[in-house]
Image (cartoon, rainbow, N blue to C red; front, side):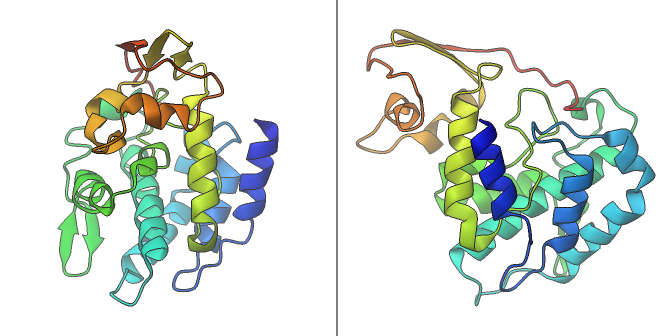
Length: 232
């Protein structure tokens, strides 16, 4: 795990992309998020001006038809995560993002001439890009969520980053309990089950691409209760 974290730190150390400069966002993450994805919300609240500056950068520099698929994916993954931080900080202190009214449906994110919500980014943009690994890159500010990466996702390193965070999540014993004949897994795999299957592959097939334990095709599947406590 430490090796993978070091790789991610190396990949995101500069935060420079072709059509978007993620350096300020990268610095914000480095300063307020641990290598295990724990957010120092108290410190971030104190440095709210830095957070608002990064949010403004996302609002002023948005994807166009000239951007590559990876550039668009990286932008919206990072945008989802930074706006989730903003939603929490704007309502902090709180013990859970679920205590915030309309946290996911509030249209507080500026996208061109309209305002959109976190749900819109997740369901109307990212999930429509046919990339199931986004579920392990976007973070809902909760303990049971995939860990918030403390570096920016970048277009030229996106494939490696998505592979690493997916493998980390699947094999994280605090998120999933996997054995050959029985798996107790995150509700994420239940809520978005269709995203992990294709006409010729199953959820077990997806998990076996990343699990260090080989799962039987007829393994018993159970879903774990989701812990919505703030990831601090």
